[in-house]
Length: 158
Image 1 (cartoon, rainbow, N blue to C red):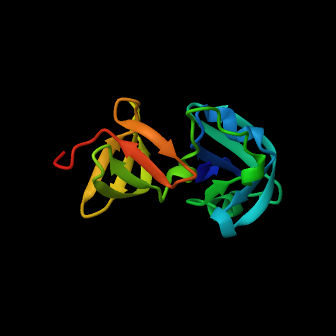
Image 2 (cartoon, rainbow, N blue to C red):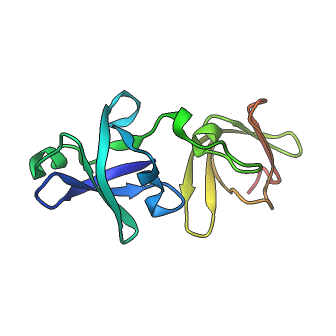
Image 3 (cartoon, rainbow, N blue to C red):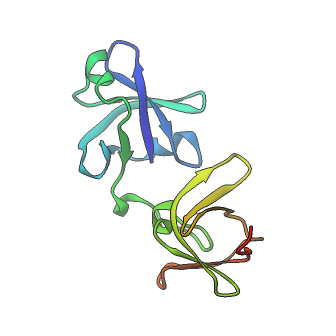
């Protein structure tokens, strides 16, 4: 959901690059797991949008050195805390690992990651070679989470 990029000030605040649609969206969650899935849980005592980032204070992080020690840490929240995705919307985590297949049946590989480009999100597909496929309706035709596949209108030689 985000990443701690730097300490902010001298009282233990951290600067956060959120991965949410709206910069302040991460502040909707009162507890963050810092350090990825195996990280430590921190209550968010205060926070605010700061430009296109966030600044936040985490309980128990009370000086600049403690905040600096968290630099580079990923922030996750429990899946149960997330609202359900609406129709034709997907959490990126649900797309990672899905097989990508052309409408002609050519298997391209699996989704390794997604990249936000500003114009649209892009699937990074790892197979016999890496493919970058825009995650837009023109190319992504069917996402079958239960079946573990994404059907795309994409040519093998692109």
